[in-house]
Length: 88
Image (cartoon, rainbow, N blue to C red; front, side, top):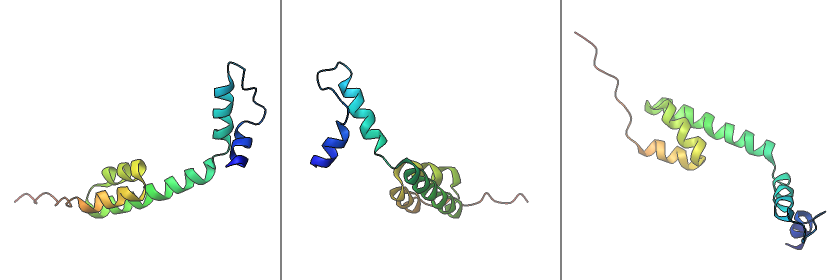
């Protein structure tokens, strides 16, 4: 924890008026954004497939984007849509 705190406060003067923002941006720079993007893309792709399978493509992608793998459970728990009857 001391290492994380040291990295977050590196180059920060605690008495400066913008110290909060400096610490905040230091913390944001420690986030692995590339990995988070690709994991999110993976979750949405699986959500699209599950949504297609259940007849709810957009809803599957949206739940997966918002909740990740938990969104998969949401879309699987919803009833699938039946195709409309063919005209006679």
